[in-house]
Length: 329
Ligand code: ACO
Image (cartoon, rainbow, N blue to C red; front, side):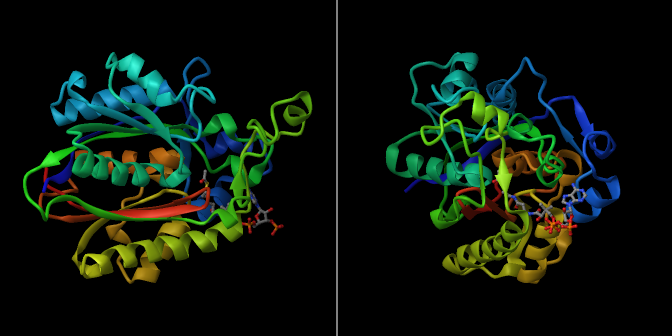
């Protein structure tokens, strides 16, 4: 049987920075509140003339370069996003056109902040059971496009960016992407969502006037579920592989709130230093948060061959999960 691994990673962050001080001029908030309640100091903003596919294409090119694999050798393209360029066609197809790699399957998946983790597991299964060899997984978000900058309870949280990975076959069994734990609970679908713009409530003058195309969420309820479900994801995944928590060298968590990350660390009894954190610079980039963090940790030399790396995330759906990787680059 074939093993599966991450052959290369890439990320792309738009240049424009939105600071807490900028937000202080837009809504009734303070740098002090935002930093102490969330850990966020600034986030990136996609310029008006660009969209999720543009960020995703840059991240994808960088991942292919990092893997040393020409884009022409990719045999499947998966894009995780909740802020795609248009309702259809898929953002994956737009990225495919920009990369000039027509003819291979390309499709979007939607699991909000857990999208990259769902995508990694899907890529693993497609390689093991479907015969694919080099899958390009892109997670790209323009969260600022669905953020209501009159709502202080959400507008301080989100930012734009993209991350990508080339996933491919590898020799050996106990190396690379070992497996995943994935879950969802649709009963909580209304805890974080965009009310309008789909078939339930199509766009109209009223929906625009009522700000129904922006993200809404119940922050404090989500907070508790996030800490519990992320901790449970890691525990369940490690139990399945009979691996002890202390064997995990580094955790790449979704970056929704620094207090959530610290809560998960405390719950698991792991030192917070084992959790890679970049929320101070980028805020919550939904599906893009984990791959951007993974790429940064890799480029900073924090991931060494043989180490056990765990990704863990939680997001709208609700969805949650974790991937277990024995880093082999
Ligand atoms: N500035 C100043 N005060 C604020 C702000 C702000 N930006 N936002 C809220 N407040 C106030 C509230 O009005 C409230 O005031 P009150 O006590 O007078 O009513 C007070 O601060 C506390 O509000 P809470 O909502 O209870 O604050 P909390 O500590 O829960 O922090 C937060 C809010 C940051 C949203 C937190 O709940 C959180 O991070 N939740 C999780 C979000 C999450 O995980 N999202 C992931 C899904 S997103 C996706 O999938 C796309």
